[in-house]
Length: 532
Ligand code: FE
Ligand code: CA
Image (cartoon, rainbow, N blue to C red):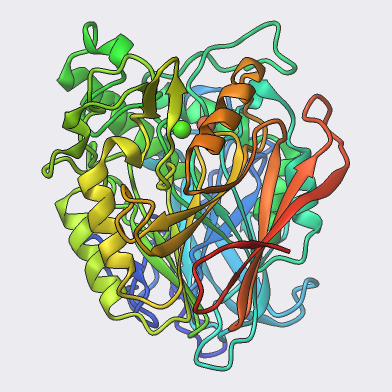
């Protein structure tokens, strides 16, 4: 074993696989296990005499920027579809560098990390000692083998931040189509990409799909690793990850459709024990952690504290929520998402975020001095009336099935300036306006909601008419578009938040055209979204 210190240019930049510092400008996670960056470099294992080719086949990524640091990610593999990625079952040394230029003439931070087989040879480096509001380039190397170069940036500091431009996305079912949306996102002038979940899907291979999985339907750690590695092998997704830092949360399909806390979805409930589902969740969470550029601690069994904040000076702050891990089971015995909303949906003790996350959110909002307070979460908050024959139904997987929790959320958001909710999950675009009492549309307007369509996941064509009828029946809804796939680009200034709904012409081919289908603006001080 070789032990060496890796300090360069006086920068105490250190990295340990799986250990991430929190704090910085006060942003960071909700877990209690706050770990500071150690002040010595890790013990670096010796390089084996030979290593297979293709070590960086899954690319590089960065995420969760603070004003002085950013998480750098890679995962070493040889064969992404082999158990253990095809690499030897031993820790491997990974060198990392951050430079002020893409030629790496001016390296400002570097160090050694360890890729551990227990974490699938994934590396999460907390590259610290960086300047605020600055673009950087980064790369990894193992011996003489260098990774592709990624570009990333730190968050700006202070009160002179005049701009934030980010895109948000969700729902990228691989078999439902290609991801030309990511080619276009890579070409946009963005600071960040925010992903709201359904980063993978857990379905099995479909030989009739536009592109079929190699990996079987995942149910265990090996399976979820293979599935995530298959997604991360896509060149358009890799390029988007390498272009800007990402801020990610998950929804249900990272584990299993419509799961709720410890409860699997209804078709599984009879056949899968709680213990079996906990194990499945643990495996899925670990594989997700291993493949994402997250500033969070590694999972502890079936627990992974994913909720956290990301700040952008005094201009904006993201509250990244987890609406899956702690939620109550869907109400009213609905066997689909959509059903008749019964009295159970109103129960005070039903929760979407769990007691701890709710309290954390309240504390974080209470200390915010950001102009825009942006909630990055999964399912639709605006009340949606789904006409079912003569009855008024609802989607019980959304906040409509968690009404008391929704009232508490809106009460919390009313405490800050300019709250805005970002939402994924539904594979359709929308704009909504949540009232002070969400279940009383006559109460004053409170929080605008932007719902992004899917990157590729389909919206059933035979349900388009139903969603349009639901929008027409729902006073909170301002805009809906279910036919088109894409993402949303959001420009934020102190005066307004402007959302361009960007749509690709097709997901049946890797390349497609892009067009802005709608633009909605929220002016600071007025929650009513208006078409531009
Ligand atoms: Fe989805
Ligand atoms: Ca979903």
